[in-house]
Image 1 (cartoon, rainbow, N blue to C red):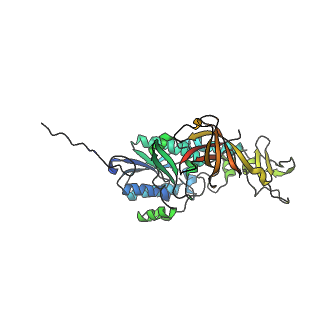
Image 2: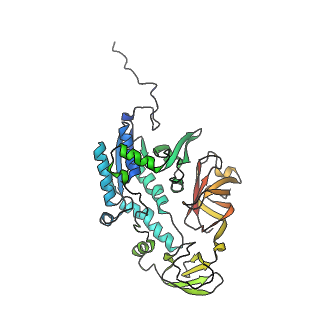
Image 3: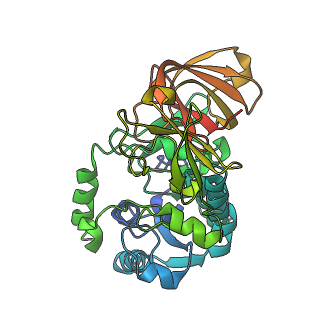
Length: 384
């Protein structure tokens, strides 16, 4: 009688949460070519995981080669490929240019034309990286997908939870609030627990990566120098129609070369000097082609209407009439106390306990648990 083959039992759970050896665990790493994702890939390869690197080409490669300081440019693709070669794992560059234009760039342009202030990096995570790229990872039979984002995934009583990064200065939760429960089950964020970016660069040096001292990208990848207006004009010819700069009291103060050159809260560059008190952009009337300006106190907002809410708490949002939370309405501002009042499963009104200045349609409002680092989701600010 042939011996019964031995079965593998009581395997320890590896660092990615799977009860099997790293060598038997395939992980797709989304590699931008920067230091963060390069460290993730090198670290997992060093731990013995079956790593596959994937870099997305998101826009015209020729234009990318002439630009530095933003992710997914030509030099960044080269840097990602070099890390993969040095660490001995396969690397693929996928052409997502059409997907990216349809899912991110077109909405960005249309939102600006409608007087909003969009956040394309959130849409990119939501509609490209954590959707199409994640499907590619599944097609490659990967057990999970890892990124270099500074955010933490913790397993709680009801499953995976999203938590702020250990380093508050690097936390990217604002840009990841729309991550769904299903996506969170598949994602891993190996850098979220690190105390600082210096710790990441130290790891890069430890792994011998040439990108260890590479500067962080500062711009939106398809807006290389922060000049939103020129990008929108290229995408939507004729978008920069001239109009009037009007005081909130009705006085015409000057003229402008297009609403797309202005954002809510802007003070500098209005071209209406000589006034006793500083004025700020308080509203954009796209239909009338007017930039409405007023004193700073007109920027104060307490009530914020939200839609497209992604809810990540353990109980349904509609199970309570009110939620007392902390919220962020800008990526660069600290969370503040607020009351969330649900209107439906995807709509709500947030009341800030203290007013916030410069709240703009098109921005996100992200929800944080008042008593922990957990993120309860968020929604998109709109006019109501």
